[in-house]
Length: 144
Image (cartoon, rainbow, N blue to C red; front, top):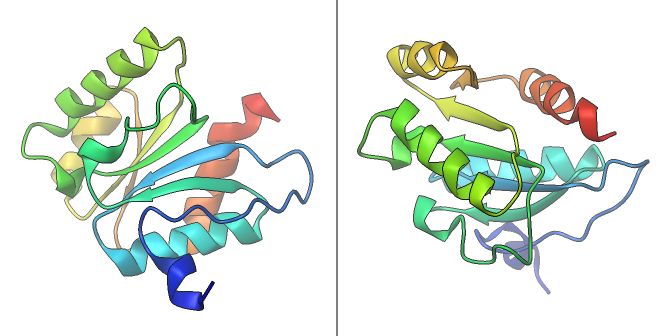
């Protein structure tokens, strides 16, 4: 396996459990560089990035075998309202008996406010990795 294999969207990194943090996290990010950075930051922190998908349509391909406890979602992948997509994803998850928190990643401050209005966490790009990791830690605190 080469370094490039590890950095390709769709590849699952091996989970290295630093503590009890090896929880499955789905990453849906269209920018391969950002997806790489998020994947490695999560893995280095001991989390388990189980999917790095470049398309929203691939999010549910392995459900219900591979259920996430957190979804990091780039809303620039969607053509509809960000809040509508979030509610649709939450409904799909609920039908599977899970309710993972969703952290939205966006470059648009209007979308950031929109999704925060309906109760989701949103992080404006570009962001500092520490800011993202703090948001992940807070979202996963009920699971640890």
